[in-house]
Length: 640
Image: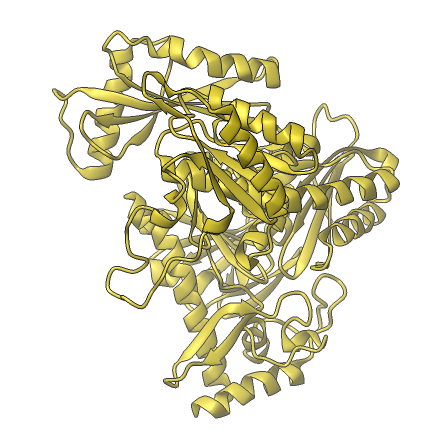
């Protein structure tokens, strides 16, 4: 149990994060931060979520009636996308543009491998329907044909679809036709979810807009079913309705989250990034890398000046999702990642995971294949005398048997094979960290690595060695930092609109931003606003997002873009015209900010050493020295 203080909070704050192996919970109340872990229930994550709430409230001596705020991060939407388990979906497109998902960007799946292919579209061509209408940049070119629309509605009904994505040409600028099509579908098919691109993503670039809308339609029925079930379980338990973490790093009420599943694809990793960013801000770390390693995957991100880096989209399972989100990179390298030998006799780790059930062999729950966790057990980095999550007692013999079988197949010794498993897994995680640092123009050697998740502190030193990082921080609540980040996150809404207007050219960008601000004021009255603009040099195809102060002269936005372009690419042309592609606005109420108390600082510990933590284990590698800082975090520094 870790003590903490929270000012001006009505009721206890509860955060629950679902991982591949464990579901983590924290409660902040009465000057205390109490944590708990329970096994994840993959068949119905809501069951494990409520079990985790009961576990953490029991440890804290509280009841459901004491809870004032309940926040939740999950992987339901992501899992459905990865597993191809979304809803049966149709697409309605402008006549002549129904092939947009197949055409994509006309780029290869892999530049040098002609046998590599993109995944099939989420909507097959047989369920793509075209409606006669057309808008151009200046408005309507061809009116919407009501007879064709009626035929499209009948065709969607005949498809037996559970969801429909509507993506019409130039709907980001002229949404009237799309609104009419969506209204007709909703009226005729009341049980079918409809996602309209002008509601999901009013931005240009047709393929990304329609791909995002299709993902939203494909996932929303699945997410809504889960959230309805979770909401009922929470109500039956006497808990408040949960707020759901979004990919942007803020929470939304459960009802709003159930309307657009695409907003939640990074719900799970986002909580950890927010928690780590708050820690980096407290520690005055100007540059930090977050390293969240759980049972199934490893999620990493960059933090500058206490603020997590943000992106305007990502690609999951080959499907672009172009929405405001935290800039998180994920690899399939977790404690449950299965080690195996490929056809050429090379040692591989992942992407298959043992998951929560049966889990690693060391969990003695039926798993027999060797995993990263089993390798840690074989090497003595996970002590067998401390049950994981307070429940799972490690079986050293089972771990040795599993790793030993792979060692025999590869012709290696037992410990040599275990070291090899960890080396391969570390390389996967380093690759992800380089993606969010080196590829963003940042030198990881200048950063502090913030390691958390159940397995993060266990593998942080080898990862840091590979990156050249000299300082690692394992937070005091490392094992449940993602759940704590949910408590710290505020309610947030993001808005975007393509404008394609010259900067400092008389277009009046502040006026163009006002409709977004009006939406924000209606959704979150009184919340502070932060604006940004996607800018580019006239004639460029790519853009950079820079802060935008609507009260300042537009020339300041152009100057900010020149500076950002020089920082990213090493050059800028101050005499060249700058264009604002899209305007962005975020409205956010700050979340709770629990203050961790002063902690006893013990003597330095030289590696190799194993240090127990709340919900995690920290391994201090040879050549590293660890100490406890003033809030109980383990700070590891590489010896000179």
